[in-house]
Image 1: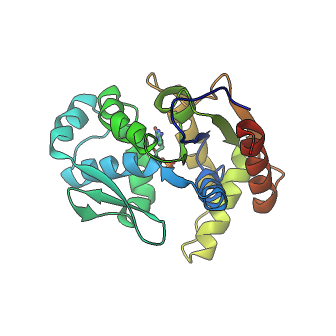
Image 2 (image 1 turned 120 degrees about the horizontal axis):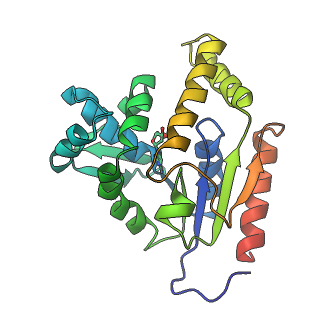
Length: 231
Ligand code: DC
């Protein structure tokens, strides 16, 4: 049970490396608990897409920072509850899901100016409703006072295998070794960056889903949330 809070809203932070199942699990948990699901990776992906379109080197902090005044990122919720991303008014929800955008997003997300630019909108999302927010630094930076913090992880092999299966299912298969290498590389980039690196908050509950299937992982997440907020 948590101590008395200033707002009636509950916030749940779910952080962890790519492919740990954060987004699917967070979305399902939010639906079960009737919270809003906020995918913060989509915000970085939107900035990544803009950098890509402008041909800017995403690793160059000054170049990325120069683009920021040109970017308006907005998040909307469709009637079915799905989050849509708008880039300067254009719906880019589907365009930000490519591997190229993943790598660019990871690069632009390393810059302090980019993170500061996106911080306010993320915090505001949790001010007027109950949310489950997933990302890399939600429990440590964005919502340090979140009621529940979960660090969701799984071995790199397990995460690469899930991605391999997903790509097969989508009809766009790829070599397992290549996926594993990309997974390890993106983890290292996210964990080793100087600003808001990926790491569990001191008060986070770590959940390793390597040996768990989707239903088991979801059950554990709901349990952790219910225990913490005393539902
Ligand atoms: O969760 P995702 O794969 O959609 O995120 C894309 C990239 O954005 C990821 O490589 C790291 C970055 N990211 C971040 O730095 N902080 C967040 N809160 C969310 C994502």
